Length: 514
Image 1 (spheres, helix red, strand yellow):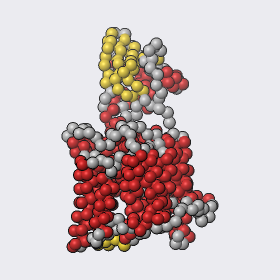
Image 2 (cartoon, rainbow, N blue to C red):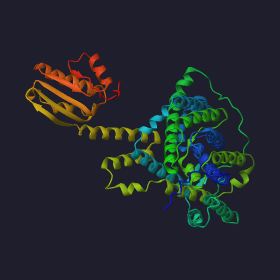
Image 3 (cartoon, one colour):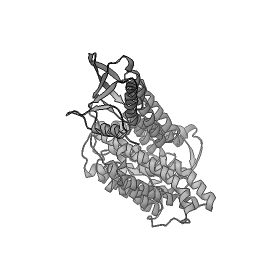
Image 4 (cartoon, rainbow, N blue to C red):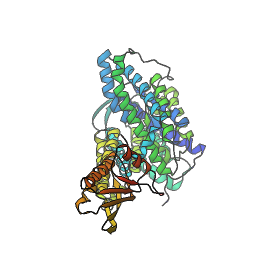
């Protein structure tokens, strides 16, 4: 079956229609995230417009959607609350705007230094756990849509006909999205589903709408300097939040870049995305926006609907500002059931169902990493989950590598014995390496050939020094062959008594330094 994501190029029609679909899905998300953070709804809408506009036009991943994000909103809650405690109601928003500007500056610096390349260190099991965790988070976020709502207040579960209507409209939305592409792909099925279900509700069906959260009506965002004291004390207060927000935003954006690269079999630029996201957040902070980053759910809606180029994100941002300026009466009447149905389809598309197929086939350590990252993403946040996943993966790799040090004897004569080492010599394997030698039973000259091995760090070099000392104490000599020039130089600087044999085919690699 052909992968629906591997369409390489889009066209203006597909991009515009998919962008409109994305914009409709962004509205309740932006409002909800603003409520989560404890700031006015328009703060989320302005952020969605500004961040989406700038990143879509200049970012490193065409087709990716960035806007106000829930992963950032949960970090902003404490910032806004403490800001209000410092200066009174409303001051928390001012501190948030200043923090968003600083967050953007940090992201700009990280992108400028090209540090985003470190996203390549994230193993595939961590990526699968990240995707699965986000799918669960998106799913859980939709559960509140089946409860009574009034603005930011979430009440009890819907009862009776209200629940039946909600479930029925959600299922109808999902059915249209699922079945329409089998008939035609001329128009995004998500957009048609939203329009059909909205038409049904406007015909007289009573159910919750976007307007029940908050109206999106407002004016064009205007420049605004955060009204806070620009002092050292303020910097000490907002900097930790800015650093966390910058990390969370960058990790989610770069992981989404990597995911879209895999889905569409194309390549984006992580460094460029980091720089442009930083610029977008600086601008958002100065225009009363709560900042943002890539949104995997809306990105997948865009990609699934045919959006591939920069026009899709640009169209979404223009639609958002038009919703704010003139389209609020219509947007307010869109049923939450339609948008919930769209997001449920996103959950189904996002979750890596192949995870279940790997059970019993993939190494148990990989399954463990997937489960850990999924769980931490749901329980805490993306940044912590990815960090934990990378650390666990590194520890698993270190444990496995430490057990794969092999020593083979290729020459054994009364005056000389040659060993060929196979494996990585680093902090995790030095003990195994040292235990393989018995100087008292070796001949006068012992040679270790590193043609099939590498010395990876200072622990490896120190292990060689320690082994040479063991041979020296009983008046024997340790010879080393096929070490890299970097290893040779460092051993000589340390004043080692090891006899290093320089060969014409010595390898060239560097040793990790602190």
